[in-house]
Length: 59
Image (cartoon, rainbow, N blue to C red; front, side):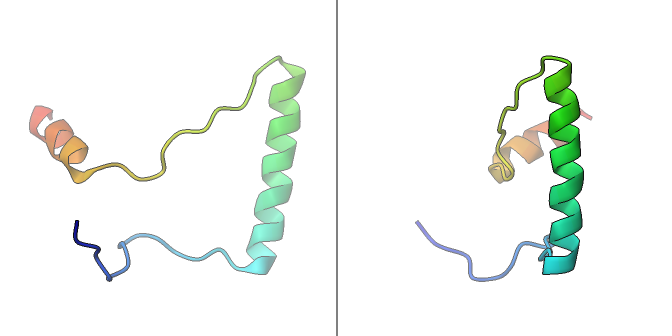
């Protein structure tokens, strides 16, 4: 397996000030969802390129 050493385009760091705001907003969303009985799930952030290629062919 070959590892790529170049950063993925479109990704950026979230700096501390923005992270604090982001965490606050996410906590408010989670609280609201919990009030309505929703549970949190986790999904992959990145996918294999093959999935994207197949999806584009269908469009």
